[in-house]
Image (cartoon, rainbow, N blue to C red; front, side, top):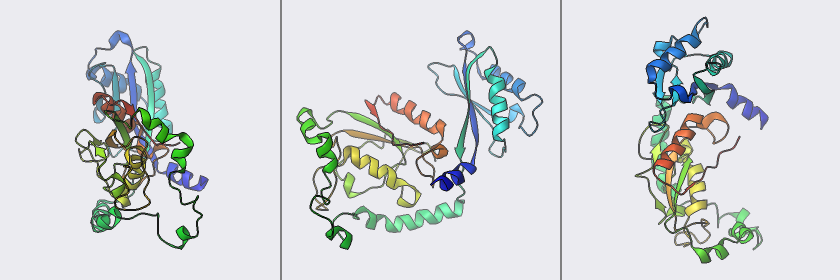
Length: 287
């Protein structure tokens, strides 16, 4: 496990620096922020000029938080990233600064296209696939081991349903998107208000080969329906009458842990969920 984590971490790169301005200049525009960045880069070798960086305001309501994003072809080392961060953090005008990193996908555009083609061909099969109820491994289990409701019995899900099953509750769900599947048949998924922060598009439907299975699994744990109309042994969610608003934050290939999801994407998804006035935000991220 540690070697896998080391391999993932070795592929990370500097993504951006997020700063929060001090209250005294909270209304300043990005010209002032650009000047601060320019000063922070003075004397540092191997760093793109300040003019090549993008300065993006995070929240117009507060107008005090900015992302300083280097050009795509940058090769800023961890040490340089923290040098820049430290220089910015030491300025009186800046209340907070943090260097952000994420893992870069090694998949090429051709591989992405091939992945899409394969996934499209497999989607119908996957939509009716279940690991439950088939194979010698299942037949060799005891009746108790075949009970897919064991977790609900432990936490008392059905007893809690006497107060409701999530009616009227909207749940923001930053994850890997989701796959259309019988586990979500009839579930309320509000993809119109969701967003794919990886590919910057509205539709969050993903495929198995690009990690959509993780979001499928976590979505079904939340809003999976109780009726087993397609498969006799299906799981059900803890709030089957709630509504999920999905946000895709994990890249094409990456597992949902450590830096692959990208701290900025997590933050932006939480912000979008807040703007959509969700009641709950559910994230299954580790590390």
